[in-house]
Image (cartoon, rainbow, N blue to C red; front, side, top):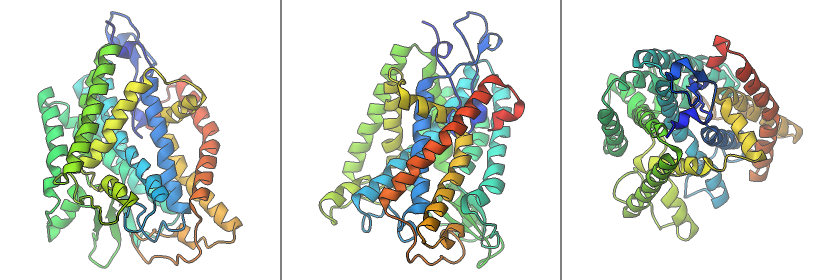
Length: 427
C-alpha cells in the first residue's frame, strides 16, 4: 500500500507556515528526489477551523463589554453562552502546537535528514520567538507602552521555543519520544503546587507557572508569561510522534485515529468524573444546574492541564479521521484556504479584530481608550464604564472579520503555491 503522503496534500501545521511540506507522488524512487508540492486537505481543514475559532476569542477580547471585568470561563460569574464562546476556543492552542510537531514529522518523511530537520526547527523557532517579542507586542495592544509591558509571551513564543527543544528531541529513540511526551503531559500537574522564590521564581514561571516577571525589579516594567513552556514542549513532541501514523495506508491510519481520539476522550471523561487528578481546580456542583456542567468543563489552560489536553486533543484527532473523507464543500474550501496560510492569517486577524472593535465603538459613540491599553496585564486598568458590546455584536464582527480576511488569504495562498521565494516560507 502506498504511503498516504504520496497521495494527498500535506501542509505545515500550526502558525509555523515555514514547515510547509513537500512530498513525493507514488514514485518508487527516493522521496526527496521526486517531490511534488502536495498537501493533506484534512490537516489544512482542521488548522483553518481552529484559526477561525481563534479569531472569535480575540474578537471577544476586544469587543465584549465584560472582557476586562472577569474571565469568561469563571463559572461563578459567567453565563452559558459566554462560557462556551470562550470554551470552544480552548481547542486552538493545543492543536496548533500538536500539529506543528506533526509537520516536523512530515518533513522527515519526505527525506530530510534529522540534522537538516534540527537546523530547520532551530531557525524557524528563533524566528517565531523574535516575531513574538518584537512584532506581536505592539500588534496586539496597539501601543508602545514598554515601560509598563515589555514583552508578552503567548502561543507563538511557546511554539518557537518548543521547536527549538524538538530539534534535540527528534534524535532520541522513538520509544523514548513517546514515553517522555506522555509522561510529561500526564505527570506535570504534580508540580502545580510548587512555588519558587528568588531568582529561580522567574525561571519557574517561564517553565510552569503563568504570571508576571519583573526583570528590573518590582515595581517596574513587566514581562508577562502567558504560556509556560513545559507542557507545550511535550505536546509538540507528541505531535511529532503522531505524524508517524501518516506513513500508513488510509484505512489503517483512519482506524488508529479513531481509536486514539476515542481513547483520549474516554480518558478525559473517566478522569474528570473521578475528580481526583488532572486539573488544579476540581469541578463542583455547588453552583447548581447548568453551572455544574460548566464547572466540569472549566479546565486550566495556563499551563494546560492533563485534562485540558485530553479534552482538546482527543476531539481534534477524531476530526482528522472524519475530515479525511469529508474535506469538501464551499465552507471546507474557505477553511482550507485559511489553513494553508496560518501564520499570515494569525498576524492579520489580530489587526482585523482590533480595528473592527475600534470602528464599532467609535460609530456607537463608546469609549475606545481601553483598546490602546495593556488590558490589565501591566499598568493601570483603563475605565471600563460603557465599553464594548454584548455577545451578538461579538459574533457579527467576528464573521465580518473572517469575510474580509478571506480574499487576502486566498491571494497569499496562490502566491505561495506558484512561487518559491525563500522569504515566503517564513510567512
